[in-house]
Length: 106
Length: 197
Image 1 (cartoon, rainbow over the protein chains, first blue to last red):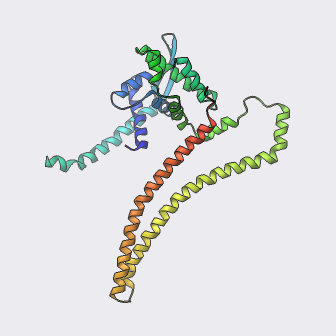
Image 2: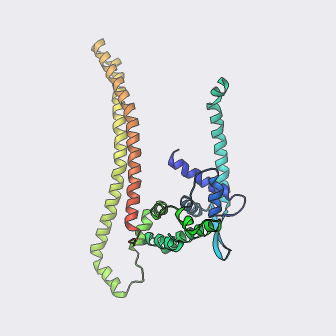
Image 3: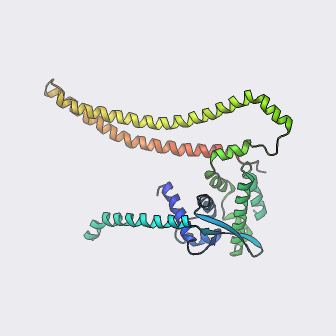
C-alpha cells in the first residue's frame, strides 16, 4: 500500500480507537494491533499530529502513583471519522462494481 | 537496557530539539515502558520491544519541520548580555548577508529539485507533441504518399516513446522525492542529537 495512504489510514484508526471512550497510548496500540500493525513508536508521531490538528486533546491523570496521558476525541476528530466513512462508502460501491463481473462468473 | 538508561540515551539523542519536545517524547516513552511492565513484561522486555533509539529518533524527527529544528539550534539558550547585543549589531553587516545567502542557497536547491522534475515532464510533453504534429503533418503535406507514410510512422513511434518515457519519468520523480525525504531526515539528524556514550 502507498505510504502516504497508510499514514492517513492509521490516523483514522487512532481516532476510531478513542471515539467511544478516552484511552491511553498503550491501550490504543493493543486495541489497534488486532487489526493493523502498529508499534508504540509509530503511534507517537500520529498522536502529536492529531493533537496539533485539534482532532484530539490530551489530559493527564494519575494512575498507580504515576502520570498517564489520556486522549479524548474532539468534534473535529469525529467529523474526520464521519468523512472517512462517507468516502469509503463511495469507494466500496466502486469496488462492488469492479468485482461485479467476477462474482457473476463464479 | 534498563528503563532509566533507555530514557537517558533517548534524551541525549534528541538533544537540539526544544525542551518541550524532548520532555514530551521522554514522558511518552516512560509511560509506555511503565504500561508494558504493568502488563506483565519485565523491564528488559518492555524496553527492548520499543525498538532502537535511532528508529525512535527518526520517527520523532520525521514530523518536526526542519525550520523548527534550525530555529531551535540558533536560538540563544539564555538572555543575551548588553555587550553581546552590541556585538551582534556591529557584526550585522557580516552575519545578515551570510545568513541571507545561506537561506537563498537552500531555497535555490529546493527550487532546482522541482525544476528537474518539471523539466522531465516538459521533455516528455515535447516528444509527445512532436509525434502528434508529425502524424498531423502526414495528412497536410503534399510530397506524395511515401513521405506521408514516413511522417505518420515516425509520429506514431514518437508518441509511443513519449508514453513509455512518461512511466519512466514518473519512477524517476518518485525516486527523487524519496531521496529528498532521506536528505531532509539526514539534515535533521545533523542538528539533533548529542554524542552517545
